[in-house]
Length: 311
Ligand code: FO1
Image (cartoon, rainbow, N blue to C red; front, side, top):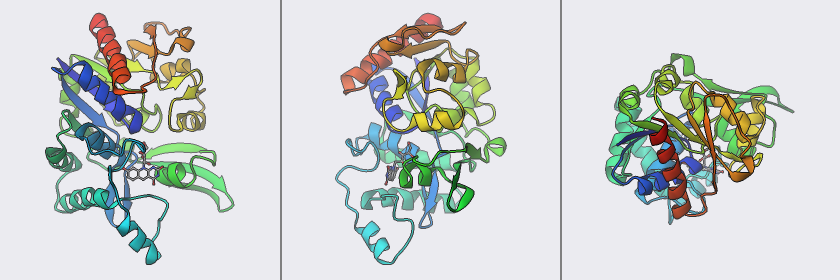
């Protein structure tokens, strides 16, 4: 069975670990969000691709959900000693090696998809990990503070400001000119089913859907999504701040409507959201908290079963 899954950061990666356990015989292609990518100290950092690669490859810092396990921060401290900015983004020593390899390959002319394949050659995540695009498409956030109205990189809003300043706009800069990475549209066309993990619907799933051609390709397939919102609140992260920024209510109903019945065929919600309805979409309620790998696998299995029934 061939499955395509879109993924963002921590929630998506944990769900994918469950999906692999639920359908070990499936060939899974993950289309990873690259809107979070940022250049720091001359190095290209791809947080969501690395989170999927490390989580499925066994290198992730489990408590943080991002970055490497058994990490040290000597380089970060030395950079700070030189007064280098920014100091609000915590790059570990082991993680630096990933960004050095990636940047060296990008500078040699390899596209991000080839770089990601090379990095995954070491980590063996057990899925094919494709960036949503090889082109530059970065999420920037418009805020208004004492320095006036300005756009800042998503990571500065997310990590330095902890989304404490309202986002007046969230824009994927470069989306209109970006093309799906090689293999993305083929993987979707060849998929038996598509699963949307409970990733951030705005800055993870939403950004991938903004790459021209991807939403249209997915709409041809049987797609089952897992609600990232339970009882009016995100399970983790700050999806509520992102949804508010685009004028969408923080609810399982509103996220389903944001994705739309043109895309979604099945929608898994938590029991307290059992009243969610949308014409043309089958809604099922079940426990959705991924408190351990077993729970993640159960949710993933339910999504696959639903997709098979809908196909
Ligand atoms: N998130 C934080 O809250 N603080 C950090 O210092 C931080 C560093 C970091 C370094 C590498 C990486 O791959 C991810 C990192 N993240 C950090 C998480 C990152 O901001 C998020 O994982 C995604 O961008 C949103 O899903």
